[in-house]
Image (cartoon, rainbow, N blue to C red; front, side, top):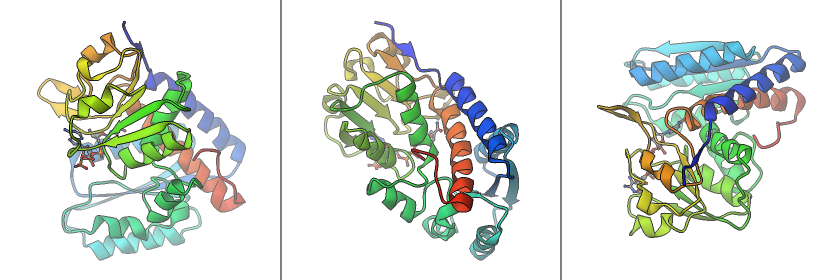
Length: 285
Ligand code: NAP
């Protein structure tokens, strides 16, 4: 079997065009503010892409880049200013923050209504309770990819490798909400392959290059590769490309989940604007 490639680039382009139409129809300026502290090159690239995509979708953006030695209280002051700014709909604090900062505390300072990353405990709790408001963009992107390729979830076995707050846990909650039977695996899981081989849907979000090999995958399974690993041979995912010989569907790296994340961030920003100004949210975000 050669797996069908789940084309995140194509779907993300379609979704971004839809967001641009919706922003125009909204008729009021929509604004995303980002905060980046320090000089991590990958973070600068990610934030740059988010601004470029916002601009293309007609979303205004404010780009706050602060030196690595900025104090935590200065960052908290900036978050407070953006919380109070009526023109700002979404606030995104690019992670990781420098070591001298208490990351969870900074994330908790963001107004939950403007928390377009969905990392605030209130938004995480709402997702857990099945009343989502802002949901992290990468898990939303994974779900949108699965939906685009008509992957059945109800009653199917879904296995998620990874239990981070950013990917593993929220995507497990979203799969559960779609009535999949969900198993979450992590670094202490014994016999990972025993779990993954049972999966109709496998989401790999461990940050370990080539962790998922063909012998770990059920024939015909839908496999979503979230991993972004910079290796000597370039950017690779958590899934060995040879898995394409076994899986029914496979998302590539790059060009799978990555582009979907940005599309969903834009959708979350518009959703935040609607929620704050009209008291309604886009369905599913
Ligand atoms: P993370 O916070 O480092 O979490 C990794 C998770 O994988 C942890 O729960 C860890 O278990 C588990 N794990 C590590 N090694 C494992 C192993 N050998 N077997 C089973 N589980 C293992 O990473 P993250 O932020 O969730 O990101 C995961 C990957 O997705 C990274 O490559 C990241 O770059 C990528 N990512 C991509 C996007 C995108 O837009 N494409 C967005 C976010 C993240 P423990 O909890 O036990 O340590």
